[in-house]
Length: 126
Image 1 (cartoon, helix red, strand yellow):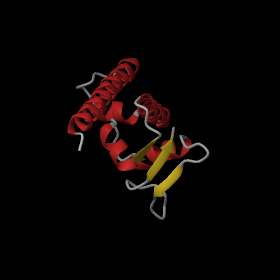
Image 2: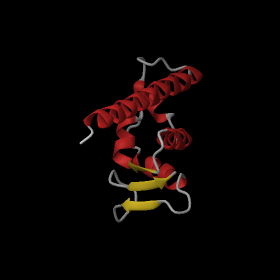
Image 3: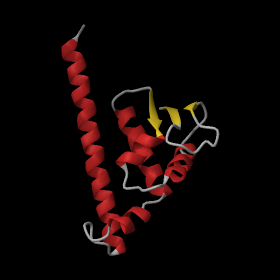
Image 4: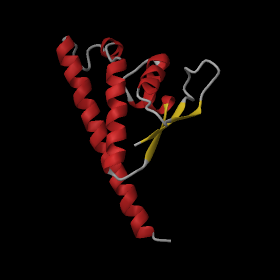
């Protein structure tokens, strides 16, 4: 096995994720400032102001980062997105954003009967 190549690829992915988290923190901070909410003052208020548009932007950024790394597709799971975003009990909003980001050819890998659970998994082709 080419461990050195694998390690370099993993480090590149980690770096991309760190950059995305930094961008996400800036976005949350910007929203908090625009709403006049102190970041440590009232987390619930800032959480509720994070909307579908912001989630779609995050998904778009993840897709772009994967494309920049030369990947052909990216698979996202609603539960994972919900965990990394400043959300609370917002799974339908995450799922709606995921569906809205689909283009022709993208695949739903897994979904619950309702279609709005933490198990929704979509493969986006880049």
